[in-house]
Length: 608
Ligand code: FHN
Image (cartoon, rainbow, N blue to C red):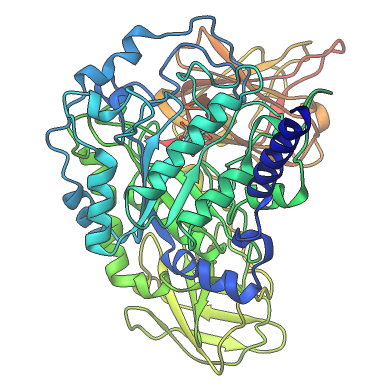
């Protein structure tokens, strides 16, 4: 009897073991470069996608997931909240009835805006399923709306030839079994939901996972997840967040049971968030960035401008990546004016310049504040944000240029020799926010080719927005015989002071300079320029404030540099998002030996 039972158990384990171990059909494991290039082709050609964060949270303009103040058994910032429910947030679905939701209209809107794929929230950290899952009652078909949002969305994507992506947060702050004990119950539950999504909604082109919790690989059966996904959707593309954050941190945490599990979970592409990804021509990547104040609907204002969004798309494309631009629809299923404005402007720009975006590949020059380059066949496109005085010069190009023009047909002067490639274009022929120059080469550029840099003094600060400090006011903790009040304005604009500093406090243990930019604005960066070689600013501290009373320390100088570029961010929606509401800035040094504080130039960047 015992032997038979043992055999039965052994067989069961063997079968389970074999099924669990079967990653051989998972493309990331064994596919050739050619097979991978073919599977990734549509994604690499697409360049531009629409991310959509939407759910009952939009009824209360709460940030999706993060607006639920309850039970976060684990998250990247260790924010532990004792409560297990948030009655207000958890009951918003009872008021969620997006009667104006029209998936067909959404997909046509995205197409007209130039997007080639769309990624919709199926379930976020708040645990609410925007699809008719049989595994939970906390779902859209339990709301007054009653219909399956994902189903309509998938049908509309299929109807209009829009690549279909579904976002799924494995991290779940609502589910009672999440990360409980060995997590086996939750791990099986969420994989069954993924199975529903990849079975019941036709062809799914992309799954956008968004984090698990904890560090213990042993609490997740990623091999079963990936083998199931590719059994159901063989051509699927998956991002790099299925196992994000997993990685032993405590002695109890286990690593991946086998290297191929980690290889599968690494997915097909990286996902820099809230910023432009660094140029990478060897690994696919996609920046996800929200147009509004947060990921989900947070009201009718605070949207990025169309020009910045166009430049973000150019910077991603020329860096070898994609832009997944996020929209957060209103609770009724329509889009706010500020978002529609961005989408329409990008659609119009792409109608004119899309040939220099779609189907291109990044490089061969490194992108930056000047703009960037990309290529397709024998065409090399230079997307120029900022011109030098005489034009632009680049490191030498090992491909002969046959002709040059702007994409809207104006002649461009070019010079090419073994030392450099340069282009000139008179001011009147330039375009905003980008001038697209098309060089025709004697032969196509090999994909992945990198030849060097643009030779410009562009400081690449465009992504931080506009200068907000030209009319700022300065207040000092003290003055000194070296201080000339008439120079204070030179801290913010115009020619710099000949003395190398715009103000000079007295010697103090904590000298400070306070700057008032006049009103609260969304400050994204502060550039602090020292007097050449002036080391008294070592350890400089920057604090920011909305009211001049409550200060937040934003940065301190680890190492002295001639110029510091200080990004200003704020934590929200699970990320350090660029920008923070600021009116006042305070710069100070502290030390036991009294010293003066002097600075040459201070520039504050952000949105009006
Ligand atoms: O916490 C989420 C956040 O709400 C949003 O969904 C982003 C999108 O990339 N992902 C997580 C933060 O990394």
